[in-house]
Image (cartoon, rainbow, N blue to C red):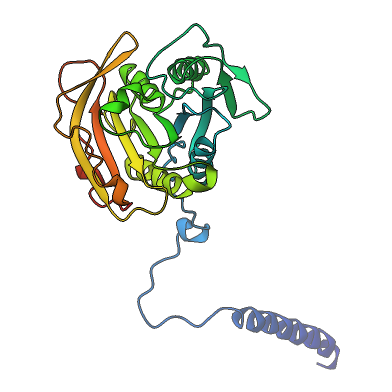
Length: 295
């Protein structure tokens, strides 16, 4: 019996090792859950991923062709350009190389745009209408036609029957006759850029209120805006009128405001809708859309 003890010790030692191993493995297994647990599946072992929702693509900035009849260096056009640029609009300036006040909608053969030191500004030797024609052609050729044409702000008012001689209005009517919505802007008693700051701010708000659809309003419609040299005390809508373009001559047809300035001389801003597209029917009014616009 004594000869079998070493073998017995070996067997017992091996058994102890096996028991220890089994005991150690058992200690790494969590206790069984007492509640009902869904069985583990392959899907639950992978990291869940969520595809982000596609963001709507932002609309490109409104493209504005800006001109005037006082020349590209005039304070009025500089003030409006700065205000529209600050508001985030894509502004291209094509304007006469000098003062062309009183040109109305006259055109000439001087429509070749010339570069300036400012890459966003080009000039023509002709009239405000020439500048619009040149600007539209250049922007369309580049595949970037404007959404809106703004003319001004003019240094001085353009109200009543005298608007048919205004180069500021003539440029806007030329654009409208070509199927673009247009705004003509004038500042009463203005002499320099500082005088036009409040008008320029108003133009930026006006464009912002109209900018959601493309085009912002009916092609062929001109908004003739007159603003006092200081902050306006209110806003007057003048009766809508039709303005025709026969060759390069403008004529007012209908309307009953005559030479009423709508309170401009007393510090109010005014807007008159001019149907200038030369087509049958009247462009849709924007007056209701601007009911909450403050001067």
